[in-house]
Amino acid sequence: MDKNEIKDKLLEIIEEEMPEVDKASIDTTASLADDGLDSVSLIKVIVDAEKTFDVAFDDRELALNKYENLDDMVELIEEKLQ
Amino acid sequence: MANKVVLPVKYPAVTSWQWHATLFSILGDDENAKRWIYSNYIQLRCYNIAEYTTGDEILLCDMMPGSSAMKECPYLIFSLITKPQIESYCGDVIDFIVKTIDLGGYVYGAFDEAKMLCDVSVDYKFSHELFIYGYNMEEEVFYVGDFTFKDKYSYTTVSFEKVKSGFDALTAGEDHVFKDDYKGTRGLYVIQKNTDNRYYDIDPALIKDTLREYLNGDDTKNHFRMMRNRFDDTVFGVNVYDALLARVDKQLHEEEPDFDIRALHIAYDHKVLMLDRLKYLMANEVIPFEQELLDEYAIVVDNMLAARNLLVRISVTNEIEAGARIKTYLNDAKAKEMAILSHVVNEL
Figure 1: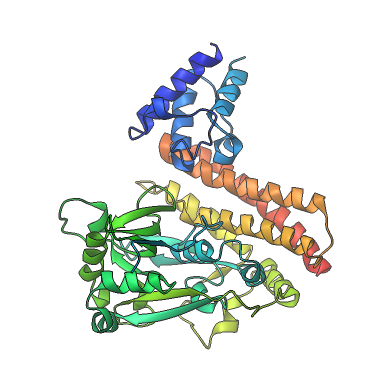
Figure 2 (figure 1 turned 180 degrees about the vertical axis):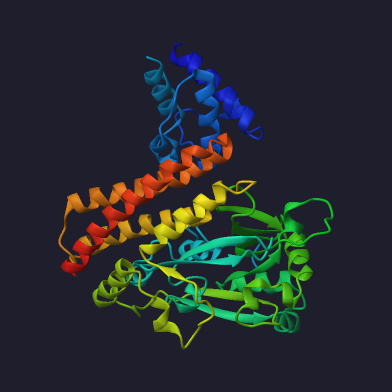
């Protein structure tokens, strides 16, 4: 799975978890907070992402401050898939 | 009267309770206020109490000073105004808040926030502290800070009408902000900054004494019995780690598990603030600069964040057995923090 596919699926997950967020408006280079995510919604997104991509995040990877932006999370998932 | 006035606020470093979020929102990066903040907010304590909204038992964990922080902070002027005073001076609460903001005053007090959260009429009340820091006459909204409107502390706007109905709906007996100390009184607090002069210096002796009490789990409130002495079951300092573990274990093993993260969150905020304090003390040459010490304490902060986030994760996945990892994070954080702070006490 390439980065763009991961990103598209991740955006779908965010939209599903946070219906108030329009995925078209998400800037993957902006901070996750600017994209409307908080620490609780991020963890919900990660739990869904684990199922979707069949990967595991460790407890320290659940923190909002571990990611500068959504692209960081895409890269981490790509690494986990390799 | 201006069309729009928004008093300065900064997203708070401590968001655990509304009283701390309000104090840190107002004082933010003020250099004078830092001298008081870093000399205090060291001791941590917790006790079991019935939550005022639900009656359920919770572990109330907080730093010291707690809900009285804004009264005790020398860099704020914190004035109680009763409802009869508000009505006598201004006629109604909207006019009072607008005039207060025009004079540079922030407003803080209990409102029925069920009136703010729901567009339709509801038959229950949700009394919560609201922090008001601005208004817009054209849009007829107040600028407010609270935890209620999103899953975390946030700044937003609430209409004049909803603020008025939220204020009017609560009786004196339902005003939980005043209930403990001023039973039978309904009103608001006006908060003004008092930061132009230096009223308080960084206090190494107080920091050293309080760190010792934190490490020994001593009853710090014995110093303040002249002001309040209501609770006898309070746990202090590093013993809070054990109380947190016992609470999490109980929460997760109830018939219907409870995933309240507030006690873990304040413990995390305590570590964030402690790390900031260590950096401040080093930058101001109160203790020698030691990067290794800061790096080690950053691991304590990470452990507490991992524990809090794991409880959130368990609330989503219901994997109760993962709670065992919370014990590891807290025990590691406790051992590491005790070693670091014992070293700091010797340096002070």
